[in-house]
View 1 (tube, rainbow, N blue to C red):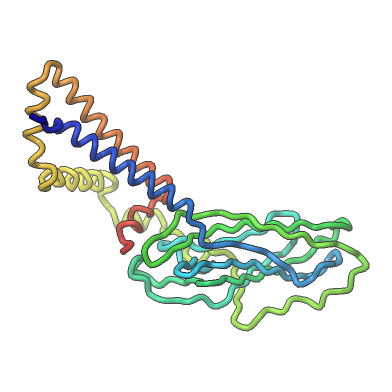
View 2 (view 1 turned 180 degrees about the vertical axis):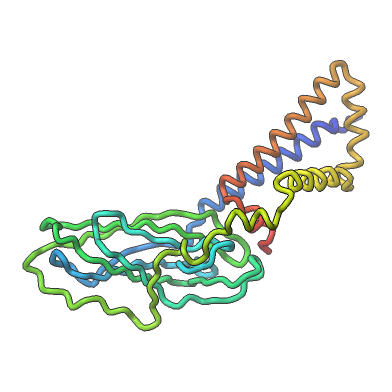
Amino acid sequence: MRLAPAPGIILVRRALCSLTVLVASTCFGQQLDPVQWSMSSDVQRVRPGDLIALHLSATIEPGWHLYSLTTPRGGPIPTTATLRAGALQKTVFYQPAPDRRFDQNFNLDTETFAKQAALLVSGVVPLDAHAGGLDVTADVRYQACSDRQCLPPKTKTVSIGISVDAAAPAQPGVQIPNGYTSVVSAATTAPPIPVTKLAEQYPAGAGLFLLTAFGLGFAAVFTPCVFPMIPITVSFFLNRRGGIAQAATFTAGIVFLFCGLGLGVTALTGPFGVVRLGANP
């Protein structure tokens, strides 16, 4: 006669299966890399003080997109790009007109680039730039999404070398293509909500929120997949020597396991990652 596994073992197996699925999905998501960045220039030799333009381009695989530099805060993560200090001065980023449409996953209008994102960067070569090679490095942070999933945000670095020569021909300036607009900073597109506003929305403070969370968690005990297991689990521990200590250890293990899973998901996807995951079809 084959005995059925104990209820505690069943719950532990379920928890381990959930952890395995989380780790596998996380590793698989990190392997996906549908966006490749590159940087180029139309000129090879520049003089100190010249105003030049660089092309910062992203090649995006079919079915994927990333968000514009002017995507409002509070939804998907906007693309941000910066040049490292010392290479160029008075830098300005330009982007083409993004595809703006309502996204049901985030319940707001989003601005996206698909297939390609061709950004333009203008900057002045420092007057004290030494003759020789000038390395220009850009750091780009972005989030790639498809209709089914969003990958964790990534930061990539691309570089280009430009020759500085005082005898080089003068540059005519920077021609901004039609439809391109300058971007000061994506962080300024939507200021954070003041603390006073948050206090007005939640006048009872964190206490009411914690009480609500506890109440909803307690209500989950009465779901069909949990409630029938309570008498079985209780009787299992009561019929064992030292069952109270074992039950306390079992309970603490469940609490720490799921708290660890929650903290891990938050660390990987950000504070709103779980919300986006739940809203993703």
